[in-house]
Image (tube, rainbow, N blue to C red; front, side, top):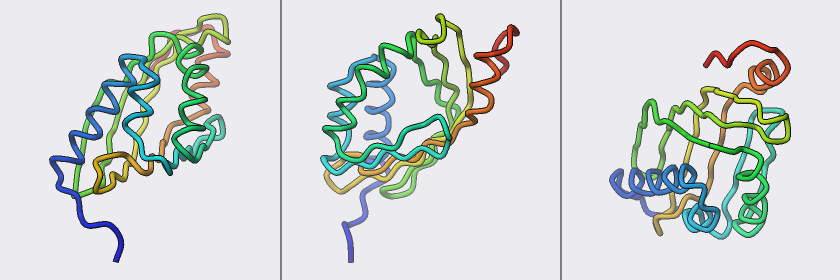
Length: 142
């Protein structure tokens, strides 16, 4: 039958903790929000899928260093039982691209387990827009 349904309040709290940890640039706190078998799925060609909390945590230091000033501003959060969809505006300065600023919009889909940890995150964002902002001299648009 699968895991029992998680209350919407617990799901909302798990997602809020995760976003707060991302915005605090705290790799250990971010990893503590996800389950040991966590799946981090990207739909963008620039994104990289990762399975497992340990592998996810290992990638976070490099990600947080390259995405300086990372910030997720929540536009909307929809929660139902153990599922959530969060529309965001993400801003960062990409160090590996000469400290170029980027602003994009995207959506996270989350599944949260009965234990209150995120088990699956799917990230939807436009890698073409990121590429445009990194290669064109104009200011970010999103």
